[in-house]
Length: 130
Image (tube, rainbow, N blue to C red; front, side, top):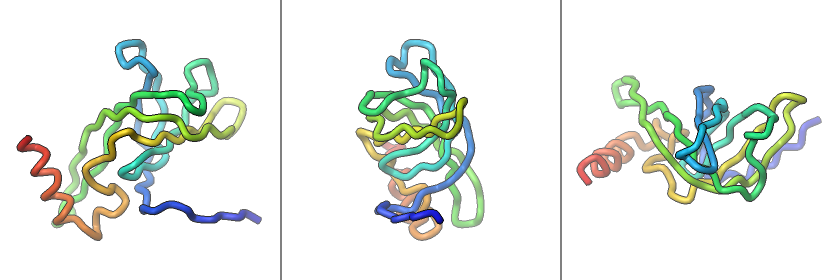
């Protein structure tokens, strides 16, 4: 029986797109697969090798987040975010699940787009002007 105590303050968007990451973003990037994302952080899987992040490590990641419009349209927002690794979990002998907390949050809540879509679009439009 699985004991799941939900401590999250924000609904997460679950999807499986690539994420690229490195401690030094000018070096060779490693690839993982996004598991879920919220405005403050993300979880992804990666190979259990020397490029796998470790808890406490600072990392920079490049990833895309789907954005949904009020008319059921679909777009993609590109992000580069730095953060620290909160947790690394063993999935199997070849995979690890990594949780990163961003130093700077995303400008919208990816998992709550339907609930506040108009506010989200206004925030994104304001950022595009800057």
